[in-house]
Figure (cartoon, rainbow, N blue to C red):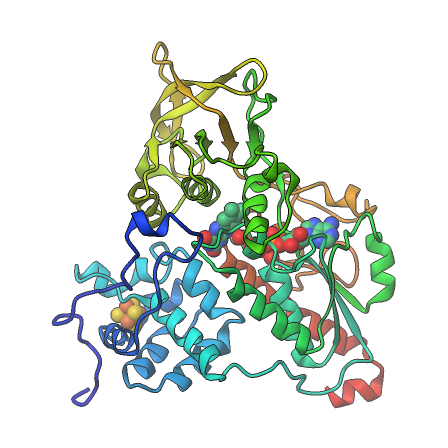
Length: 482
Ligand SMILES: Cc1cc2nc3c(=O)[nH]c(=O)nc-3n(C[C@H](O)[C@H](O)[C@H](O)COP(=O)(O)OP(=O)(O)OC[C@H]3O[C@@H](n4cnc5c(N)ncnc54)[C@H](O)[C@@H]3O)c2cc1C
Ligand code: SF4
């Protein structure tokens, strides 16, 4: 590799795009780091050692061609880099922003293991696709041929549904997307805050699908506005990509008090305000952390997003209670660091025992925990440490303990829809079909709460399976054209 610009990891230090200072970034909901400048991206890409067996790629759920587009970036061939990264992902700039790279590609980069600091893969991915949008290289969505005699219904406009919709439309099918929210994007729009993912980045993807002929039915709730069977009648195939939305409960006295709220209600209200919407429960103060002592309960991505949102809303204090320690939390360490820089206090090894207050919540009584033997997930199980209770002042408590599947067979009026013991949809893993013929499923509603990149992967896989199913069903003249 005599004339290669690569393998610079020995002489060139790892450099992520600089974060804005915490005191500045907590004044707004904008992303915390700007993109690289061109030279920064090219230099950082040139640190890659072009591994024969690229662990970055094997640990990426999409198996993105990471070393290849890093090399193209280092060579200044940005358009080709974009095209290659776009070939395996429907939303590389979104994954570049919010994938937990420290657990996926970057966490498995050989340079990281060698002690040089991983190649900054996510930041380069974000840079090349943002550049493609700026330069007009992102092509409109165009069907490769006309298969519009057959139509597909997609229930849920999150990353799994949007990916399936894009790829099926590209195949030429008529595609209809149904979502109970008034805007598409799923948790990209209403869950994840703007400081991780600015909303115009999501909306330009949705607009591209609309302009490409995908028909969106917003504020359409399956189960209320139509049953599953009715939609099945309208379309030749359906995919259910409704995510998981039943919040896990806390069983503790006082948990029903006003001021103890659900994480997703809180985050959705904040994201809606970012769009400029009127939100009664925010505007009357219920879901606004301004001037309050806030306690967030949980240690995952959702909890991290809540604490950092509360800081930006001007809370007096923000504490995060988590029953395990830092090393055993499910959320990304990168997010914990960001939160700490912004003024969040983590109270590790603590669990709520009761909520007190008369009219509204006034405090949380907390038990100290200690870690016992590892549980089924491999993480050490917490157990209460008797006699160690203490109290925290709180005017707003946000419950962020994770989500389970809603009861879809009941909600959709479809008792024949088979579910697992966790309530997620049971699918045949080869065909990705549910127990109902022609009804497929993808994303969190199959996996349980997971990641955006896995939803994209499922959307890609389900589109391939639906295409095969529809080709087999097509009338002979269409099948011949396929
Ligand atoms: C607060 C929060 C932060 C997160 N942060 C990250 C992160 O930083 N990185 C990461 O990789 N992952 C993150 N995740 C996880 C990630 O957002 C999900 O794994 C991903 O969005 C799942 O995609 P999906 O398409 O399966 O479902 P969703 O994104 O949940 O979309 C499902 C859609 O279905 C719609 N729907 C549901 N029921 C119906 C119905 N009956 N009728 C019509 N429409 C319906 C919903 O309105 C929604 O729009 C986060 C999750 C949360 C909650
Ligand atoms: S593992 Fe790291 S060094 Fe190896 S190809 Fe991937 S990014 Fe490059």
